[in-house]
Amino acid sequence: MKAKVVSVLLCMAMVTTMAVGCGSSSDSSESTDSSKKESTEAEGGDAEETGEQTLFQQAEAQVDEDLAPLPDKDSGKKLAAIESTLSNSFWVTMQEGYEDAAEEYGVSIDIQATDSDTDTAGQLDILNNMLVQDYDAIAVSPLTEDCLISGIVSANQQGVTVITTGNEVNEEALEEAGGSLDAKITVDFHNQGVLGAQYIVDQNNGEGQVAIIAGNEGATQSDARRDGAKETFEKAGMDVVAVEQCDFDAQKAYDAATAIIEANPDLVGIACGNDDMALGVVQALEEKGLNDQVTVVGVDFTEEAKAAIEDGSYDASVAMSPYLMGKEAVIIMLKALQGEDVSSIGDSTPMAVVDADNVDQMSDWH
Image (cartoon, rainbow, N blue to C red; front, side):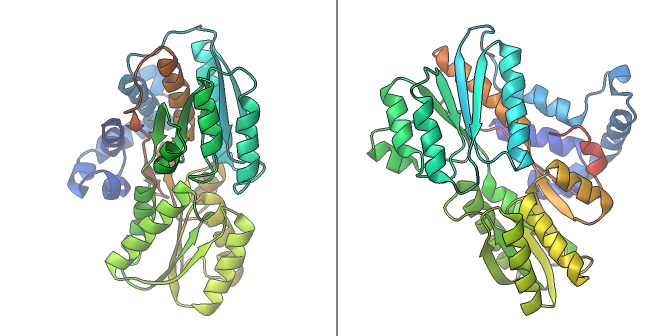
């Protein structure tokens, strides 16, 4: 329910690029004039003077409304969170969300991350080490659906609240192992893949050869984005000439894109599982002089992606808010520790396709 509310809020505030994910083109066009006015005021620094909220401020306010009643402050609870590598700015932004929310609610939080997106053993070690440090609740973003199951079971046995943020756990396997989650903040990763691929379809009138650069196989977000993109391309009748797993690594994506381009010189689009890989693809295209021929879309709308969209070298990114995910996780952990049932929280993460037409409206998005 919350995901629909927040997504609708963004649809009403943003230009027609959003129509794919959030409603009809007529709905989006009806709100274009007001959204441009709001964007201009925010960009010009007049938002505070006029009382207008930026798109991010609206989304943040909606999160608070969706999660009401909000938990008590200054409870002294001791929280922890486990992320993926901080070499990816997505996770750095999520860390900021965790930290700011913990400060707002007067609790402590310890945030740790793996060395890479594929360090599943290292992530389990982090969780097991946390379980001897008396944390009241731990938020985890599993690298794969199975890598943290034994650690979650141990947390259950010790009475430690555990929630997942974004990436999911194989709940059937977890149940078979005798474990459970207190809550999960889910993201429609499949729809992210659909949105990115649909942008490429629209830019190329549904014609031509396309490819997919995916993350690490077995990761919730990677597989869902890949599958969503592939299904969308095939539904449109486009020719998917390659699907490469590149482990969210820019260099691997660069190498894969170079090979794909050489084998398929008429390629018109590449859908990527995140912005790091997409920017590796962009580099490969620039070196081949094909940047204008091939539409590239990624996911996350990182700072690096924003700059590349602004300078015209990168076409589009499917934005979500890792900052708000971190904030939500702190609120949900505290609500659970107060004895509230948070098991049905679900998906409350806003999304938007950002390109040159609306990137100026996302100046404070994080």
